[in-house]
Length: 115
Image (cartoon, rainbow, N blue to C red):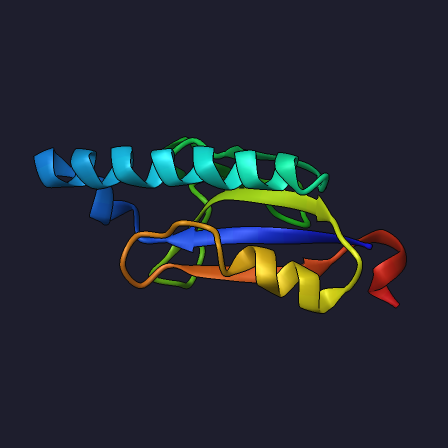
């Protein structure tokens, strides 16, 4: 069963010198996380996303606007797509994803799991 593990964090946590130190620590944590996924034989993919300032939004009427226009304090910063046995396994893996303070992981089924 495939699940998207969507990483939401506040971009401002990564600003400045302290933010760069935090970013380095979080990236190192992601490297360890992906090594653990591989060691466990989990089929996965994933990526970080560029900052929200590079995003655009396409509306239903075909207009493109700058920015993601999310009504949240956190921004979607990256994702993992994992193929695991069930929702409980997806939650177990999501708990291991490194986050900045206040970050969240959305766990969402994909494909055949949607219905």
